[in-house]
Image 1: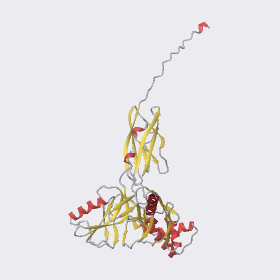
Image 2: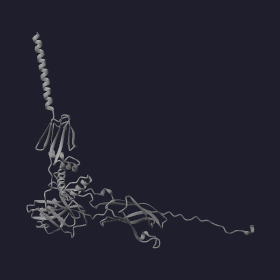
Image 3: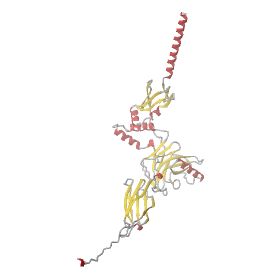
Image 4: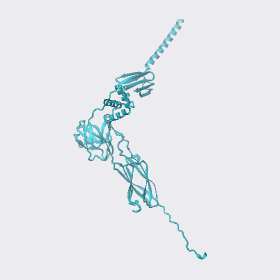
Length: 436
C-alpha cells in the first residue's frame, strides 16, 4: 500500500515537473527575437507586444503588434522615417556616416545597431533647355541645396568645410530619396498667350530617330500627341535636337504646362524628358467660385518621374463677381453702390459711364471709372455717380486680369422714381381795408 502511495506521488511530481517544463519551453519560444541580415531588421514573436524603434533618439516606429507575429524592414527604410533629416544627417556625418538604430520590444529586448549610411547623388543626366520657360533640374542636383544647407548650418553655428558640406548634402539626399525622380525649378515661370514666334534650344543625351517638344498638363496628353505624330509620318519632328525647335500643345489649351522633349524611334517607342515649365493664360477671371481652379502642384510622368511646381508659381486663374448693392438719388444724379468679390488673377474692374448714364454734358462726363484691385482686399465696395432713368439701366462692366484678358458684361439696375406734385395752396389777397 505504501509503495502504491509513493508511486502515485512520484507520478504526480513527474506530471507537475513536465507541465512546468513545458511551460518554460513555451515561454522561451514566445520570447521576441531580433535579427539582422543584409541590413534588414527582423523581429519575430511580437504578437501582443509593444515595439519601439528610434534613430539617433528620434522615435520613428511605435506600435502595439496585435496580429502580426513578425516584422521585417530594411535599416535604410527605418532611417528614412526620420522627420528632421538635416539634423540626423549631421549627426551621422560627425559619427563617420554611422547612425544608431535602437530596437526595444516591451521589456524583453533593448539593443542598438550601428548602420553605415552612404551619400546619394543624382546620376549625371545631360539635358537642358534655353528659351522662354523656367528650366527644370533634378531635385537632388539643385544648386540651391548647398546654399540652403549653409544657411541652416550658419543658424546652428556649425561650420563645415566645402567637402563636408557636399557629403552632408549626399546624406540628406539618401534620407530623402524615394523611387521617384523629382524635378524642380529655381526660376520664375513665365506667362505667355501662345508659342507663336517662340523658339527653344535643347541639349540632350537621349538617342532617338525623331525629336519634338510638347507642352502638356498630364502624361495622357503626350500619349495622344505621339499617336498623332506617328500617324502623320513624324511631320512635326526634327532629327537633330541641337537646332531651334518649335513647341506644341493641345489646341486652345491654357494653364500650367511642362515642356517635354519627346524622343521617338521609328518603331514608335518613345521616351520623355521634362525640360521646363510655362504658363499659358488666355482666360479672363470667371464670375463664380465653383469655376475657379488653382490647385496644380505636380505632374506625374512614366518611369517614376514627377515635376513639382513651385509655391510661387504665377497666378493665371481668377474669380471676380461685381454686383450693385444700392442706388439712391433724385432722378438726375444717383449714388450707385458696387461690391466686388475677387480672388486670384484679377487686376481691375472698370465701370463705364456711357452717354445714356449721363444727365447732360454739364452734370456728368462720359468716362470710365477704373478700380485697381492690386492693393485691395475682398470684398471691396465703392460708390459711383450715375444718371438712372425709370426702368432698366444697363451699366457696362469690364473685368481684367494681370495678363490682359478681359471679360465684358452689363449690370442691369432697374429704377423707379416716384414723383408727387406739389399741393395747390390758395392765398386770398383781397383784403377789405374798410373794416379797419
